[in-house]
Image 1 (cartoon, rainbow, N blue to C red):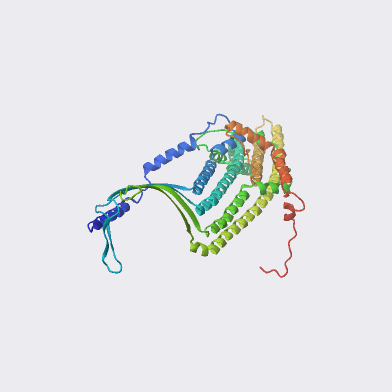
Image 2 (cartoon, rainbow, N blue to C red):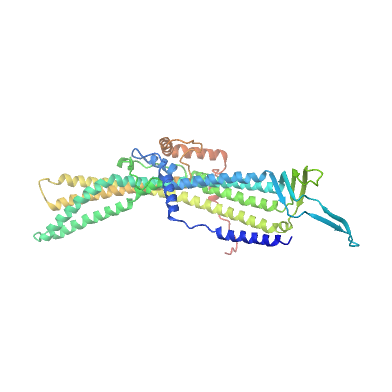
Length: 538
Protein backbone atom coordinates (compact mmCIF):
# COMPACT_ATOMS: atom_id res chain seq x y z
CA UNK A 1 0.00 0.00 0.00
CA UNK A 2 2.83 2.44 0.82
CA UNK A 3 4.33 2.08 -2.67
CA UNK A 4 1.33 3.95 -4.09
CA UNK A 5 2.02 7.27 -2.35
CA UNK A 6 5.50 8.01 -3.90
CA UNK A 7 4.06 7.19 -7.31
CA UNK A 8 1.15 9.61 -6.79
CA UNK A 9 3.55 12.32 -5.65
CA UNK A 10 5.68 11.85 -8.78
CA UNK A 11 2.60 12.10 -11.01
CA UNK A 12 1.38 15.31 -9.30
CA UNK A 13 4.80 16.98 -9.51
CA UNK A 14 5.13 15.97 -13.16
CA UNK A 15 1.74 17.49 -13.98
CA UNK A 16 2.69 20.80 -12.35
CA UNK A 17 6.02 20.88 -14.15
CA UNK A 18 4.39 20.18 -17.50
CA UNK A 19 1.81 22.90 -16.91
CA UNK A 20 4.47 25.48 -16.05
CA UNK A 21 6.43 24.63 -19.19
CA UNK A 22 3.51 24.91 -21.60
CA UNK A 23 1.36 27.60 -19.95
CA UNK A 24 2.74 30.70 -21.76
CA UNK A 25 1.90 31.73 -25.34
CA UNK A 26 4.29 32.79 -28.06
CA UNK A 27 4.82 36.50 -28.88
CA UNK A 28 3.28 37.83 -32.09
CA UNK A 29 5.60 36.99 -34.96
CA UNK A 30 6.01 38.65 -38.34
CA UNK A 31 4.49 35.65 -40.14
CA UNK A 32 1.36 35.79 -37.98
CA UNK A 33 1.10 39.53 -38.54
CA UNK A 34 1.42 39.06 -42.28
CA UNK A 35 -1.34 36.43 -42.34
CA UNK A 36 -3.60 38.61 -40.21
CA UNK A 37 -3.02 41.77 -42.26
CA UNK A 38 -3.53 39.94 -45.55
CA UNK A 39 -6.84 38.52 -44.36
CA UNK A 40 -7.93 41.86 -42.87
CA UNK A 41 -7.18 43.82 -46.05
CA UNK A 42 -8.97 41.22 -48.15
CA UNK A 43 -12.09 41.42 -46.00
CA UNK A 44 -11.93 45.23 -45.80
CA UNK A 45 -11.75 46.03 -49.50
CA UNK A 46 -12.28 42.98 -51.74
CA UNK A 47 -15.93 42.06 -51.14
CA UNK A 48 -17.44 45.29 -52.47
CA UNK A 49 -19.48 46.30 -55.49
CA UNK A 50 -17.05 48.02 -57.86
CA UNK A 51 -17.30 51.76 -58.51
CA UNK A 52 -18.33 51.97 -62.17
CA UNK A 53 -19.69 55.52 -62.42
CA UNK A 54 -19.37 58.95 -60.77
CA UNK A 55 -20.91 58.80 -57.31
CA UNK A 56 -23.86 60.90 -56.23
CA UNK A 57 -24.37 61.92 -52.61
CA UNK A 58 -26.80 59.06 -52.10
CA UNK A 59 -24.47 56.55 -53.78
CA UNK A 60 -21.83 57.61 -51.27
CA UNK A 61 -24.28 57.25 -48.38
CA UNK A 62 -25.34 53.79 -49.57
CA UNK A 63 -21.72 52.67 -49.72
CA UNK A 64 -21.13 54.15 -46.27
CA UNK A 65 -24.01 52.12 -44.82
CA UNK A 66 -22.81 48.94 -46.53
CA UNK A 67 -19.03 49.12 -46.26
CA UNK A 68 -18.01 51.60 -43.56
CA UNK A 69 -15.72 49.80 -41.11
CA UNK A 70 -17.28 51.38 -38.01
CA UNK A 71 -20.71 50.29 -39.24
CA UNK A 72 -19.40 46.74 -39.65
CA UNK A 73 -18.07 46.77 -36.09
CA UNK A 74 -21.46 47.96 -34.78
CA UNK A 75 -23.28 45.28 -36.80
CA UNK A 76 -20.97 42.55 -35.48
CA UNK A 77 -21.48 43.80 -31.91
CA UNK A 78 -25.24 43.40 -32.39
CA UNK A 79 -24.76 39.83 -33.63
CA UNK A 80 -22.49 39.05 -30.68
CA UNK A 81 -25.03 40.33 -28.17
CA UNK A 82 -27.73 38.28 -29.89
CA UNK A 83 -25.67 35.13 -29.36
CA UNK A 84 -25.46 35.86 -25.63
CA UNK A 85 -29.26 35.69 -25.37
CA UNK A 86 -29.24 32.02 -26.38
CA UNK A 87 -26.39 31.33 -23.98
CA UNK A 88 -28.30 32.79 -21.05
CA UNK A 89 -31.56 31.07 -22.08
CA UNK A 90 -29.87 27.67 -21.82
CA UNK A 91 -29.59 28.23 -18.07
CA UNK A 92 -33.38 28.01 -17.75
CA UNK A 93 -33.37 24.41 -18.99
CA UNK A 94 -32.68 21.43 -16.70
CA UNK A 95 -29.27 19.76 -16.80
CA UNK A 96 -28.99 16.33 -18.39
CA UNK A 97 -25.90 14.50 -17.13
CA UNK A 98 -24.42 11.31 -18.50
CA UNK A 99 -21.71 9.60 -16.44
CA UNK A 100 -19.47 6.62 -17.01
CA UNK A 101 -16.68 5.46 -14.67
CA UNK A 102 -14.23 2.60 -14.72
CA UNK A 103 -12.25 1.98 -11.53
CA UNK A 104 -9.56 -0.51 -10.64
CA UNK A 105 -7.37 -1.21 -7.62
CA UNK A 106 -4.38 -3.48 -7.11
CA UNK A 107 -5.61 -4.75 -3.73
CA UNK A 108 -9.01 -6.04 -2.76
CA UNK A 109 -11.23 -3.65 -0.78
CA UNK A 110 -11.66 -5.65 2.47
CA UNK A 111 -13.10 -4.27 5.68
CA UNK A 112 -13.77 -5.72 9.11
CA UNK A 113 -15.70 -4.57 12.19
CA UNK A 114 -14.81 -4.29 15.91
CA UNK A 115 -17.19 -4.20 18.88
CA UNK A 116 -17.15 -0.68 20.33
CA UNK A 117 -17.56 -1.91 23.92
CA UNK A 118 -15.21 -4.90 24.06
CA UNK A 119 -12.87 -4.18 21.16
CA UNK A 120 -13.33 -7.74 19.88
CA UNK A 121 -13.72 -8.36 16.19
CA UNK A 122 -17.42 -8.46 15.41
CA UNK A 123 -17.27 -8.69 11.60
CA UNK A 124 -14.85 -11.01 9.81
CA UNK A 125 -12.80 -9.54 6.91
CA UNK A 126 -15.35 -8.97 4.19
CA UNK A 127 -15.21 -7.81 0.57
CA UNK A 128 -18.07 -5.59 -0.65
CA UNK A 129 -16.77 -4.38 -4.05
CA UNK A 130 -15.03 -5.90 -7.05
CA UNK A 131 -11.47 -4.84 -7.72
CA UNK A 132 -12.42 -3.88 -11.27
CA UNK A 133 -15.67 -2.01 -11.51
CA UNK A 134 -17.80 -0.06 -14.02
CA UNK A 135 -20.69 2.22 -13.23
CA UNK A 136 -22.79 4.62 -15.33
CA UNK A 137 -25.73 6.91 -14.94
CA UNK A 138 -28.06 9.21 -16.85
CA UNK A 139 -29.95 11.77 -14.82
CA UNK A 140 -31.82 15.03 -15.20
CA UNK A 141 -31.59 17.79 -12.60
CA UNK A 142 -33.18 21.19 -12.29
CA UNK A 143 -32.37 24.02 -9.93
CA UNK A 144 -35.35 26.38 -9.65
CA UNK A 145 -33.26 29.29 -8.37
CA UNK A 146 -30.71 28.97 -11.16
CA UNK A 147 -33.56 28.83 -13.67
CA UNK A 148 -35.04 32.04 -12.25
CA UNK A 149 -31.69 33.80 -12.36
CA UNK A 150 -31.10 32.60 -15.93
CA UNK A 151 -34.51 33.94 -16.94
CA UNK A 152 -33.72 37.39 -15.51
CA UNK A 153 -30.29 37.42 -17.16
CA UNK A 154 -31.83 36.35 -20.47
CA UNK A 155 -34.04 39.44 -20.30
CA UNK A 156 -30.98 41.58 -19.57
CA UNK A 157 -29.14 39.97 -22.49
CA UNK A 158 -32.10 40.82 -24.72
CA UNK A 159 -31.89 44.43 -23.58
CA UNK A 160 -28.14 44.40 -24.23
CA UNK A 161 -28.82 43.33 -27.81
CA UNK A 162 -31.30 46.19 -28.14
CA UNK A 163 -28.61 48.53 -26.81
CA UNK A 164 -26.29 47.22 -29.53
CA UNK A 165 -29.03 47.94 -32.09
CA UNK A 166 -29.29 51.52 -30.85
CA UNK A 167 -25.52 51.90 -30.97
CA UNK A 168 -25.61 50.65 -34.55
CA UNK A 169 -28.27 53.26 -35.35
CA UNK A 170 -26.08 55.94 -33.80
CA UNK A 171 -23.10 54.80 -35.87
CA UNK A 172 -25.24 55.01 -39.01
CA UNK A 173 -26.37 58.55 -38.14
CA UNK A 174 -22.76 59.61 -37.65
CA UNK A 175 -21.74 58.06 -40.98
CA UNK A 176 -24.58 59.80 -42.85
CA UNK A 177 -23.67 63.15 -41.30
CA UNK A 178 -19.97 62.80 -42.07
CA UNK A 179 -20.56 61.49 -45.61
CA UNK A 180 -22.76 64.50 -46.41
CA UNK A 181 -20.15 66.95 -45.09
CA UNK A 182 -17.20 65.27 -46.82
CA UNK A 183 -19.09 64.80 -50.09
CA UNK A 184 -19.94 68.47 -50.59
CA UNK A 185 -16.45 69.61 -49.66
CA UNK A 186 -14.89 67.08 -52.04
CA UNK A 187 -17.34 67.98 -54.84
CA UNK A 188 -16.57 71.68 -54.36
CA UNK A 189 -12.85 71.11 -54.71
CA UNK A 190 -13.42 68.84 -57.72
CA UNK A 191 -15.50 71.55 -59.44
CA UNK A 192 -13.02 74.35 -58.66
CA UNK A 193 -9.66 72.63 -59.07
CA UNK A 194 -9.20 73.20 -62.81
CA UNK A 195 -10.33 76.86 -62.60
CA UNK A 196 -8.03 77.51 -59.64
CA UNK A 197 -5.04 75.91 -61.36
CA UNK A 198 -5.48 77.85 -64.63
CA UNK A 199 -6.06 81.24 -63.01
CA UNK A 200 -3.28 80.68 -60.49
CA UNK A 201 -0.82 80.09 -63.32
CA UNK A 202 -1.88 83.24 -65.19
CA UNK A 203 -1.88 85.34 -62.00
CA UNK A 204 1.66 84.30 -61.10
CA UNK A 205 2.87 85.16 -64.60
CA UNK A 206 1.21 88.57 -64.41
CA UNK A 207 2.76 89.15 -60.99
CA UNK A 208 6.17 88.45 -62.52
CA UNK A 209 5.46 90.92 -65.33
CA UNK A 210 4.44 93.57 -62.79
CA UNK A 211 7.61 92.91 -60.82
CA UNK A 212 9.72 93.26 -63.97
CA UNK A 213 8.02 96.58 -64.74
CA UNK A 214 8.68 97.73 -61.19
CA UNK A 215 12.34 96.77 -61.34
CA UNK A 216 12.79 98.66 -64.64
CA UNK A 217 12.54 101.95 -62.66
CA UNK A 218 11.50 103.88 -65.76
CA UNK A 219 7.89 104.36 -64.72
CA UNK A 220 6.11 106.72 -62.40
CA UNK A 221 3.65 103.99 -61.37
CA UNK A 222 5.93 102.08 -59.03
CA UNK A 223 3.55 102.48 -56.08
CA UNK A 224 0.62 101.30 -58.19
CA UNK A 225 2.63 98.31 -59.44
CA UNK A 226 3.44 97.30 -55.88
CA UNK A 227 -0.21 97.67 -54.83
CA UNK A 228 -1.37 95.47 -57.71
CA UNK A 229 1.21 92.81 -56.90
CA UNK A 230 0.13 92.84 -53.28
CA UNK A 231 -3.55 92.50 -54.14
CA UNK A 232 -2.92 89.63 -56.57
CA UNK A 233 -0.77 87.78 -54.03
CA UNK A 234 -3.27 88.44 -51.23
CA UNK A 235 -6.04 86.95 -53.38
CA UNK A 236 -3.86 83.98 -54.30
CA UNK A 237 -3.06 83.41 -50.64
CA UNK A 238 -6.75 83.62 -49.68
CA UNK A 239 -7.58 81.23 -52.51
CA UNK A 240 -4.91 78.84 -51.25
CA UNK A 241 -6.43 78.96 -47.74
CA UNK A 242 -9.83 78.05 -49.20
CA UNK A 243 -8.24 75.08 -50.99
CA UNK A 244 -6.64 74.00 -47.71
CA UNK A 245 -10.07 74.11 -46.04
CA UNK A 246 -11.44 71.77 -48.71
CA UNK A 247 -8.35 69.58 -48.96
CA UNK A 248 -8.52 65.99 -47.71
CA UNK A 249 -12.29 65.77 -48.10
CA UNK A 250 -12.09 63.22 -50.91
CA UNK A 251 -9.75 61.00 -48.91
CA UNK A 252 -12.05 61.32 -45.89
CA UNK A 253 -15.01 60.39 -48.07
CA UNK A 254 -13.21 57.31 -49.36
CA UNK A 255 -12.60 56.17 -45.79
CA UNK A 256 -16.23 56.75 -44.84
CA UNK A 257 -17.34 54.65 -47.83
CA UNK A 258 -14.92 51.86 -46.94
CA UNK A 259 -12.95 52.35 -50.16
CA UNK A 260 -9.24 51.70 -50.42
CA UNK A 261 -7.19 54.95 -50.24
CA UNK A 262 -5.70 53.91 -53.62
CA UNK A 263 -9.12 53.59 -55.29
CA UNK A 264 -9.80 56.30 -57.87
CA UNK A 265 -13.33 57.67 -58.09
CA UNK A 266 -15.13 60.83 -59.15
CA UNK A 267 -18.24 62.58 -57.87
CA UNK A 268 -21.24 63.30 -60.05
CA UNK A 269 -22.16 66.58 -58.32
CA UNK A 270 -21.29 69.63 -60.41
CA UNK A 271 -21.29 73.29 -59.44
CA UNK A 272 -25.02 73.73 -60.00
CA UNK A 273 -25.74 70.74 -57.73
CA UNK A 274 -23.64 72.28 -54.98
CA UNK A 275 -25.22 75.72 -55.36
CA UNK A 276 -28.81 74.48 -55.53
CA UNK A 277 -31.31 75.75 -52.97
CA UNK A 278 -30.70 74.38 -49.51
CA UNK A 279 -33.37 72.16 -47.93
CA UNK A 280 -35.98 73.92 -45.84
CA UNK A 281 -36.88 72.79 -42.35
CA UNK A 282 -40.19 74.30 -41.37
CA UNK A 283 -41.15 71.87 -38.60
CA UNK A 284 -41.79 73.72 -35.35
CA UNK A 285 -39.16 73.62 -32.64
CA UNK A 286 -41.36 71.85 -30.08
CA UNK A 287 -42.14 69.16 -32.66
CA UNK A 288 -38.41 68.68 -33.27
CA UNK A 289 -37.89 68.33 -29.52
CA UNK A 290 -40.54 65.59 -29.33
CA UNK A 291 -39.11 63.67 -32.28
CA UNK A 292 -35.56 63.80 -30.93
CA UNK A 293 -36.56 62.75 -27.39
CA UNK A 294 -38.44 59.74 -28.72
CA UNK A 295 -36.18 58.68 -31.59
CA UNK A 296 -32.60 59.42 -30.54
CA UNK A 297 -30.76 56.13 -29.90
CA UNK A 298 -28.94 57.50 -26.84
CA UNK A 299 -32.23 58.00 -24.98
CA UNK A 300 -33.54 54.58 -25.88
CA UNK A 301 -30.22 53.15 -24.76
CA UNK A 302 -30.61 54.99 -21.44
CA UNK A 303 -34.03 53.40 -20.84
CA UNK A 304 -32.61 49.96 -21.59
CA UNK A 305 -29.65 50.55 -19.26
CA UNK A 306 -32.03 51.52 -16.45
CA UNK A 307 -34.07 48.38 -17.13
CA UNK A 308 -30.97 46.25 -16.68
CA UNK A 309 -30.01 48.10 -13.50
CA UNK A 310 -33.53 47.65 -12.11
CA UNK A 311 -33.41 43.95 -12.91
CA UNK A 312 -30.26 43.63 -10.82
CA UNK A 313 -32.41 44.42 -7.77
CA UNK A 314 -34.61 41.44 -8.64
CA UNK A 315 -31.54 39.26 -9.05
CA UNK A 316 -30.28 40.37 -5.64
CA UNK A 317 -33.65 39.37 -4.15
CA UNK A 318 -33.64 35.99 -5.90
CA UNK A 319 -30.21 35.23 -4.49
CA UNK A 320 -31.65 35.37 -0.97
CA UNK A 321 -34.11 32.52 -1.67
CA UNK A 322 -33.27 28.93 -0.75
CA UNK A 323 -31.95 26.74 -3.53
CA UNK A 324 -34.56 24.12 -4.40
CA UNK A 325 -33.30 21.38 -6.69
CA UNK A 326 -34.35 17.96 -7.82
CA UNK A 327 -32.70 15.05 -9.62
CA UNK A 328 -34.12 12.00 -11.36
CA UNK A 329 -32.00 9.39 -13.14
CA UNK A 330 -31.25 5.85 -14.22
CA UNK A 331 -28.04 4.19 -12.96
CA UNK A 332 -25.95 1.05 -13.49
CA UNK A 333 -23.15 -0.50 -11.41
CA UNK A 334 -21.19 -3.64 -12.43
CA UNK A 335 -20.34 -4.53 -8.81
CA UNK A 336 -21.12 -8.25 -8.55
CA UNK A 337 -21.93 -7.92 -4.86
CA UNK A 338 -24.98 -5.79 -5.60
CA UNK A 339 -28.32 -7.53 -5.82
CA UNK A 340 -29.62 -4.97 -8.37
CA UNK A 341 -27.14 -3.68 -10.92
CA UNK A 342 -29.69 -1.29 -12.50
CA UNK A 343 -31.98 1.12 -10.71
CA UNK A 344 -33.69 4.52 -10.92
CA UNK A 345 -33.25 7.20 -8.31
CA UNK A 346 -34.69 10.58 -7.38
CA UNK A 347 -33.77 13.26 -4.88
CA UNK A 348 -34.92 16.69 -3.68
CA UNK A 349 -32.72 19.19 -1.87
CA UNK A 350 -33.13 22.57 -0.22
CA UNK A 351 -30.13 24.75 0.58
CA UNK A 352 -30.01 28.23 2.07
CA UNK A 353 -26.96 30.45 1.80
CA UNK A 354 -27.17 32.49 4.98
CA UNK A 355 -24.46 34.91 3.87
CA UNK A 356 -26.58 35.91 0.84
CA UNK A 357 -29.52 36.43 3.16
CA UNK A 358 -27.62 38.76 5.50
CA UNK A 359 -25.86 40.65 2.68
CA UNK A 360 -29.09 41.30 0.75
CA UNK A 361 -29.55 44.90 2.01
CA UNK A 362 -26.06 45.83 0.80
CA UNK A 363 -26.58 44.27 -2.64
CA UNK A 364 -30.07 45.78 -2.94
CA UNK A 365 -28.78 49.26 -2.09
CA UNK A 366 -25.92 48.92 -4.59
CA UNK A 367 -28.37 47.89 -7.31
CA UNK A 368 -30.66 50.80 -6.41
CA UNK A 369 -27.74 53.23 -6.57
CA UNK A 370 -26.84 51.90 -10.02
CA UNK A 371 -30.43 52.33 -11.18
CA UNK A 372 -30.46 55.91 -9.87
CA UNK A 373 -27.19 56.54 -11.67
CA UNK A 374 -28.65 55.28 -14.96
CA UNK A 375 -31.72 57.50 -14.44
CA UNK A 376 -29.59 60.60 -13.85
CA UNK A 377 -27.43 59.74 -16.82
CA UNK A 378 -30.51 59.41 -19.03
CA UNK A 379 -31.74 62.79 -17.82
CA UNK A 380 -28.35 64.33 -18.65
CA UNK A 381 -28.54 62.84 -22.15
CA UNK A 382 -32.08 64.21 -22.57
CA UNK A 383 -30.85 67.68 -21.64
CA UNK A 384 -27.94 67.35 -24.08
CA UNK A 385 -30.31 66.23 -26.85
CA UNK A 386 -32.53 69.29 -26.34
CA UNK A 387 -29.45 71.51 -26.46
CA UNK A 388 -28.11 69.82 -29.59
CA UNK A 389 -31.44 70.20 -31.40
CA UNK A 390 -31.61 73.86 -30.48
CA UNK A 391 -28.01 74.56 -31.53
CA UNK A 392 -28.29 72.54 -34.75
CA UNK A 393 -31.52 74.32 -35.70
CA UNK A 394 -30.09 77.80 -35.13
CA UNK A 395 -26.76 76.89 -36.76
CA UNK A 396 -28.50 75.69 -39.89
CA UNK A 397 -30.59 78.86 -40.06
CA UNK A 398 -27.43 80.99 -39.75
CA UNK A 399 -25.64 78.86 -42.35
CA UNK A 400 -28.47 79.46 -44.80
CA UNK A 401 -28.23 83.22 -44.21
CA UNK A 402 -24.44 83.15 -44.59
CA UNK A 403 -24.70 81.17 -47.82
CA UNK A 404 -27.24 83.67 -49.16
CA UNK A 405 -24.88 86.56 -48.39
CA UNK A 406 -22.02 84.69 -50.06
CA UNK A 407 -24.24 84.15 -53.11
CA UNK A 408 -24.85 87.90 -53.31
CA UNK A 409 -21.15 88.65 -52.89
CA UNK A 410 -20.28 86.22 -55.69
CA UNK A 411 -22.84 87.81 -58.01
CA UNK A 412 -21.32 91.28 -57.45
CA UNK A 413 -17.77 90.01 -58.04
CA UNK A 414 -18.88 88.21 -61.20
CA UNK A 415 -20.50 91.37 -62.61
CA UNK A 416 -17.40 93.40 -61.70
CA UNK A 417 -15.06 90.98 -63.47
CA UNK A 418 -17.31 90.93 -66.54
CA UNK A 419 -17.44 94.74 -66.67
CA UNK A 420 -13.68 95.15 -66.41
CA UNK A 421 -13.09 92.43 -68.99
CA UNK A 422 -15.48 94.10 -71.44
CA UNK A 423 -13.75 97.47 -70.96
CA UNK A 424 -10.31 95.96 -71.60
CA UNK A 425 -9.11 96.66 -75.14
CA UNK A 426 -7.52 93.43 -76.51
CA UNK A 427 -5.15 95.51 -78.64
CA UNK A 428 -4.01 97.61 -75.70
CA UNK A 429 -1.34 95.82 -73.64
CA UNK A 430 -1.79 98.10 -70.63
CA UNK A 431 -0.26 96.08 -67.79
CA UNK A 432 -2.12 98.01 -65.10
CA UNK A 433 -5.51 97.37 -66.66
CA UNK A 434 -4.65 93.70 -67.15
CA UNK A 435 -3.69 93.51 -63.47
CA UNK A 436 -7.01 95.09 -62.40
CA UNK A 437 -8.89 92.58 -64.56
CA UNK A 438 -6.86 89.74 -63.01
CA UNK A 439 -7.62 91.00 -59.50
CA UNK A 440 -11.31 91.10 -60.38
CA UNK A 441 -11.16 87.53 -61.76
CA UNK A 442 -9.32 86.31 -58.68
CA UNK A 443 -11.89 88.02 -56.48
CA UNK A 444 -14.66 86.36 -58.50
CA UNK A 445 -13.05 82.94 -58.13
CA UNK A 446 -12.39 83.55 -54.44
CA UNK A 447 -16.03 84.57 -53.91
CA UNK A 448 -17.12 81.52 -55.87
CA UNK A 449 -14.93 79.26 -53.75
CA UNK A 450 -16.21 80.81 -50.52
CA UNK A 451 -19.78 80.45 -51.72
CA UNK A 452 -19.26 76.75 -52.42
CA UNK A 453 -17.56 76.26 -49.07
CA UNK A 454 -20.42 78.08 -47.33
CA UNK A 455 -22.90 75.85 -49.14
CA UNK A 456 -20.88 72.82 -48.01
CA UNK A 457 -20.91 74.14 -44.43
CA UNK A 458 -24.68 74.61 -44.66
CA UNK A 459 -25.08 71.03 -45.88
CA UNK A 460 -22.91 69.93 -42.96
CA UNK A 461 -25.15 71.82 -40.53
CA UNK A 462 -28.20 70.26 -42.18
CA UNK A 463 -26.66 66.82 -41.66
CA UNK A 464 -26.02 67.68 -38.01
CA UNK A 465 -29.65 68.75 -37.71
CA UNK A 466 -30.81 65.37 -38.99
CA UNK A 467 -28.36 63.54 -36.72
CA UNK A 468 -29.56 65.54 -33.70
CA UNK A 469 -33.10 64.30 -34.40
CA UNK A 470 -32.01 60.66 -34.65
CA UNK A 471 -33.89 60.05 -37.92
CA UNK A 472 -32.96 56.77 -39.59
CA UNK A 473 -31.90 57.13 -43.24
CA UNK A 474 -33.59 53.85 -44.20
CA UNK A 475 -36.83 52.14 -43.15
CA UNK A 476 -36.41 49.59 -40.35
CA UNK A 477 -38.22 46.95 -42.42
CA UNK A 478 -35.97 47.31 -45.48
CA UNK A 479 -34.69 43.96 -46.73
CA UNK A 480 -31.28 43.53 -48.31
CA UNK A 481 -31.04 45.47 -51.57
CA UNK A 482 -28.33 46.53 -53.99
CA UNK A 483 -26.48 49.80 -53.58
CA UNK A 484 -28.43 51.42 -56.42
CA UNK A 485 -31.81 50.68 -54.86
CA UNK A 486 -30.62 51.82 -51.44
CA UNK A 487 -29.36 55.09 -52.97
CA UNK A 488 -32.79 55.75 -54.52
CA UNK A 489 -34.55 55.16 -51.20
CA UNK A 490 -32.08 57.47 -49.43
CA UNK A 491 -32.68 60.21 -51.99
CA UNK A 492 -36.46 59.89 -51.77
CA UNK A 493 -36.48 60.03 -47.97
CA UNK A 494 -33.98 62.90 -47.84
CA UNK A 495 -35.94 65.06 -50.28
CA UNK A 496 -39.19 64.51 -48.36
CA UNK A 497 -37.76 64.65 -44.85
CA UNK A 498 -39.72 67.72 -43.74
CA UNK A 499 -43.01 67.17 -45.52
CA UNK A 500 -43.30 63.40 -45.14
CA UNK A 501 -41.01 61.78 -42.56
CA UNK A 502 -41.07 64.48 -39.89
CA UNK A 503 -44.72 65.33 -40.50
CA UNK A 504 -45.69 61.67 -40.13
CA UNK A 505 -43.68 61.26 -36.94
CA UNK A 506 -45.15 64.39 -35.40
CA UNK A 507 -48.67 63.26 -36.24
CA UNK A 508 -48.01 59.85 -34.70
CA UNK A 509 -46.57 61.42 -31.54
CA UNK A 510 -49.54 63.73 -31.25
CA UNK A 511 -51.97 60.82 -31.61
CA UNK A 512 -50.24 58.38 -29.26
CA UNK A 513 -48.69 60.55 -26.55
CA UNK A 514 -49.23 63.78 -24.65
CA UNK A 515 -45.73 65.10 -25.38
CA UNK A 516 -47.09 67.85 -27.64
CA UNK A 517 -49.95 68.80 -25.34
CA UNK A 518 -49.54 72.52 -24.50
CA UNK A 519 -50.70 71.95 -20.92
CA UNK A 520 -48.71 68.86 -19.92
CA UNK A 521 -46.31 68.15 -22.75
CA UNK A 522 -42.64 68.94 -23.35
CA UNK A 523 -43.02 72.68 -23.70
CA UNK A 524 -45.09 72.86 -20.50
CA UNK A 525 -42.09 71.47 -18.60
CA UNK A 526 -39.50 73.54 -20.48
CA UNK A 527 -41.41 76.76 -19.83
CA UNK A 528 -42.39 75.95 -16.25
CA UNK A 529 -41.60 78.66 -13.71
CA UNK A 530 -38.85 77.71 -11.24
CA UNK A 531 -39.94 76.94 -7.71
CA UNK A 532 -38.77 79.60 -5.26
CA UNK A 533 -37.03 78.07 -2.26
CA UNK A 534 -36.68 80.21 0.83
CA UNK A 535 -33.17 80.42 2.32
CA UNK A 536 -31.84 77.96 -0.22
CA UNK A 537 -28.23 77.04 0.49
CA UNK A 538 -25.82 75.51 -2.00
